[in-house]
Amino acid sequence: MTALHVTLLVAGHSSQRERLARRGGSWRSVPFPATVALIEHPTGTVLYDTGYAHRYVDATRPMPERLYSWLIPGVISPGESAVEQLAARGVDASAVSTIVLSHLHADHSSGVLDFPAARIVAAEGPDGTPGQRARGSLWSTTAHGVLPAMLPEDYAQRRVDPATLPSVETGLLGMGEGYDVMGDGSIVAVPLPGHSPGHLGLWLPATQGPRVLLVGDACWLRAALTGDLPPQQVIATMHDPDAYVRTITALTRLAAARPDILIVPSHCQETVDAARAVLGG
Ligand SMILES: [Zn+2]
Image 1: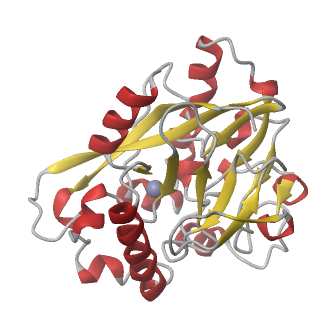
Image 2: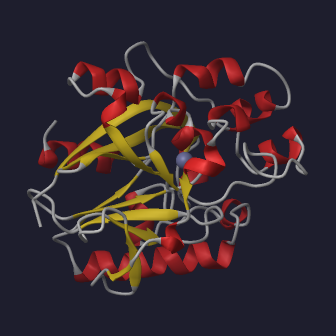
Image 3: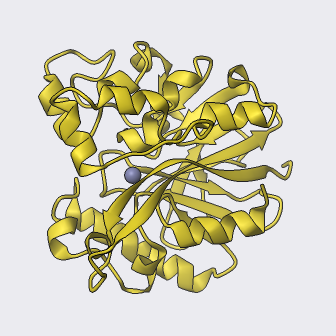
């Protein structure tokens, strides 16, 4: 297995009251970076999540999409989208062969349209997402946290159901099996259920430097893994609150047993900064 190089990028951010992210937190706003992992695999470039893109700002002007930006006020600066950051590194959008989406919420999926050659390993969208039978209205799709305008028209054709990929033992305490994304065991999608339907983490057992487990929105802050969970009212808004807590419990045990693994929640500024310092840019 070749050692993979992983770079964490931040493609825009939103902000949330700290109190919503952890019990006992303050009312001040804390940044929620939209993290994108760029993984250079010998057979192609892989992204885990795509962050915000400039189209998010336009797409959330009208109703009902504006409700989404009220809940999650996404901000993206010029040059900050994943495709722009890749170009600045000399990586063409067409080199991205695979995107693994933790889930379809817009702070993770807004950049997908910039990578037309990539297959997309992700959960099926709710009715109303491109390629689905259009039973769902725009309102109900938005209520699921999914903005159909952020997904390509051929989403259903390009989507790879993770369950169709070969199973591989992760070797991670409590995590069981995952899905072998590249067929060589180096990039493994891991079910981390609860936050949203089919939520996926990404286990990278073959990285240069420390091993990395990207956990998306399985928890928002690393503090959740030392007992600082979000308030119960916030957990109740998750897709499957019980599974969400079970996933955090499993990650908490893993973090204690394997301090050598970098566990990176997408929106934890402190962890993302620390991981970037270790992984390099
Ligand atoms: Zn998110």
